[in-house]
Length: 413
Image 1: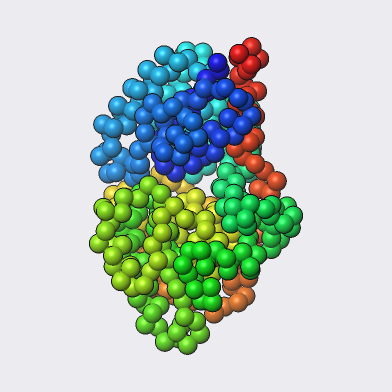
Image 2 (image 1 turned 180 degrees about the horizontal axis):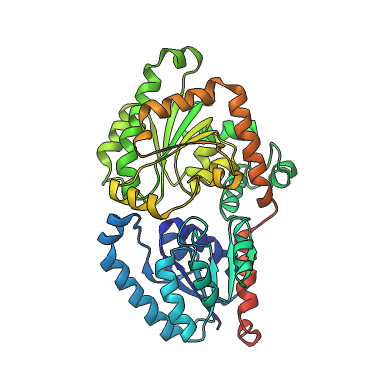
């Protein structure tokens, strides 16, 4: 039986690993899939050799060092024991590039799926990656050319979050297919729910279908939640007390927590939000964004979800001071949010560190509310940003690439 090993070192990549495992099982019956992941990958039939870890920033990574080292030993042992036909690496570059060297020495074929952000920092990694991997599958259009110039067989496959969004919208449509205009056009349709569907979503979630919704997405990592929960609570209070806003709209609020969030750990923050009338959900990010009129989003993949669903937003981010200062020295990009990076302009406002405060966030949300031209321009650039992704099915295509990489005699054992 052919064996594929998938490494998703963080929960942010574990979704992609689970979608890929599902696509592989569909395309190749009897395939043995092992790897590092979490509950979602396990649910798709992946035999886990270790679980994901979330470490980001200098201080956070140091505290997780022992766990990461132990996980690396397990991964190396699994490579030697199972000798997989293909090793699939999902982002997580420092860990995965070390593991790739071991795999290469063992003669194992390597596919890197979800490129490290080589265009943002440590650009020299492109040559290192080119010397180790057999193929690349990338999520952003401009990444393809970067690797092709370095001599790597590389393909832009689209982004798996579009699959997640489409699955949710289809499920909530009673299992029926989305209208063609929503699936295949890049205008006001692709992956954006119709009015009736939005109403159904709100009712199912326990929201008032007649009131506009602001969602707050505080991220999934500890340092993000710790710093952004209090700020988001303060924004809700400002909205509720602002006479200009109340004279126009009576907003409702929601915080969709990531599936892996430890609610007990953040109980005091969550209770504060609930006391302000904020709906707290878990694992419902797509559903909540689909019915949101505006959003405050921690920089990350969720910003692209908001773009695909055409939700006007303000992007926020805060790190420890040390992590931020070091990051400024080594990261050389004009923007941090994917929508701004992809559009090449300040399509959405980014509020970082001390600028990510309740006053600035509220001011930006009011601008989105009251300035129709500003809001429509934002959505116009969302639609341009979405176009390269239309018609792409990342997980299905990457599964196909993996099967192409398995020797013919292994495919049908």
